[in-house]
Image (cartoon, rainbow, N blue to C red; front, top):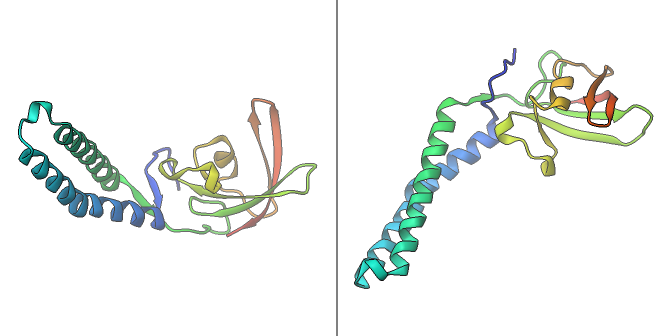
Length: 157
C-alpha cells in the first residue's frame, strides 16, 4: 500500500535521473575542470570573468549532483500498471467528467515526477488521491476551488 511519503519514481524516471547523475559526475565535471584550467591560464583570477563563470557553473553542477544523489538514495522505484486492477502509482488512467464525453488520460506518479504538460499527476494531488485504489467503472469525486466534481474511470493500464 502507498503511504504518505513522497519518494516514488517510475523506472523510466529513475533511469533518466541516474543517467543525468552519471553525465554530471563524469563528462560535465571534466568539462568544467578544463574551463577552470583555461581560465586560470589567463592570469589574474580576481578580474577573470571566465574563471568566475566556470566556478559558478561548478557550484551549480555540484549542487545538482548532491541533490540527485540524495534523491536517488531515498526513492522507491515502482512498477507501472495496476495492482489488482486498481489505480496505483504508475497506472495510466482514463477518466470522464460527469456530464461530459471528453476522455482525459493521466499517469499517476510520485510528486518528484509530476508534470501536467506530460499529463503526469502526483498520487498526492487531489485528483490523484481521489483515484487511488479505484477500479475501472468506478466513480469518484473530489473538491476543487469551483466545487465538487465527479468523474468515472473508463480505463486503467
